[in-house]
Length: 138
Length: 138
DNA sequence: GAAAAGCCTGAAGTGGCTTCAGGGTCAAGG
DNA sequence: CCTTGACCCTGAAGCCACTTCAGGCTTTTC
Image 1 (cartoon, rainbow over the protein chains, first blue to last red):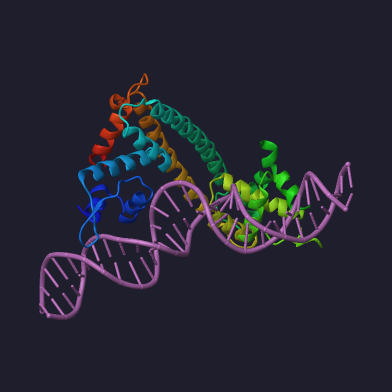
Image 2 (cartoon, chains in turn cyan, purple, yellow, brown):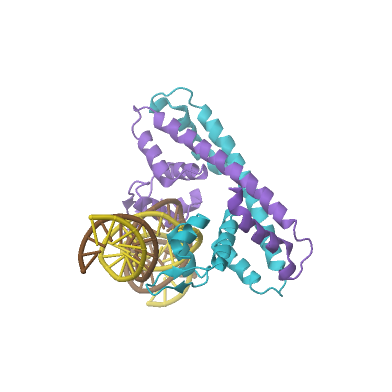
């Protein structure tokens, strides 16, 4: 299968596939006489694995580590556990941050009910006020 | 006040301040005879404004727009409202995504209770399985 | 007068891609 | 046989919001 079909069947852009190869996340594929890349089912599998990990918010470096772990089946899976635990903590923290952000944004939006002149706009006044006291809050 | 003091009093790195100047988010400051930047209280205010907007997840481009709006006090604040509404939608969407992600990560973590060999690790098996059926889910 | 602290510039690096410029290859149709 | 169009190739640059680095000047302190 060549790169276009791999791209279609995984929903990953051609450029991204080539990028993963450069980054050594995908094994170097065979080539045709015309220098086209030729992929095996193994590549499809690995590309899906990468994208699934990415959808779990893992960095490419983390995916690289996981692939390394997968390639040494007799080792311990400690690394995997640690990585996942850390990720869970990170995501929880980010969710908390975003919840606070939601509150702030909605509160800010409440300051301007009807469009008005800039100089009397409640949002802009509030933005400036908050920026001023920001340091005190922290 | 020179750049170091501005940095200390706002908690923004010196390099970041210079970067904002290059990006035209901060007005060009005066200089001393020795070519050191000299900032006024106006700069402190504007820098705080920028950082507060950034803490609300706005891009520098959006901050640039807001600063532009602030500089024309007689205009309408429609832009501000629109920008904020859009931001609220974005953040809500991101929170929903992250909630799903939390579920997935915790479920995945549940597959490995005690550290074991890679080849029998529930997490890695699950990761591979999920990657495989991922397309079907979507 | 020398060391240390502070400041300057321009360029390059970060991550995870995307886009661009300028080509080569291959199958189908005229 | 030739051309058109779909498909593929490479290397370099662009994106965002900074950060880091290399190499050098200025000011303060001892």
